Length: 111
Image (cartoon, rainbow, N blue to C red; front, side):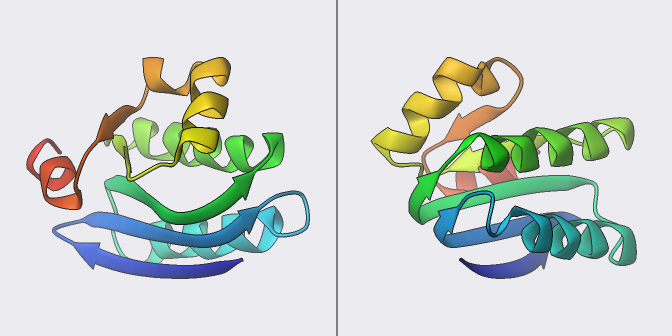
């Protein structure tokens, strides 16, 4: 799993590349939480165009970061998810609490 973090206007854009599973979630969670805490982050965008696989522990990372920024009055968006990840998110009810966008720019415009 490769993780790239960038910040635009108090929004953390998280680029996930590879597989987010029980082998990688702890490190990913720590890196994201450190960025949220140290950079005054309010909103998050998960950019998933290079996501190959996600299991339930990956869903836990997304939900946990949602809960963290929700307490701060922020929101979370999903961008460029593939059909496999979409199916997992739909089954888990993620799209009931987190919006899906076609582009990063669209997501930024709605935050």
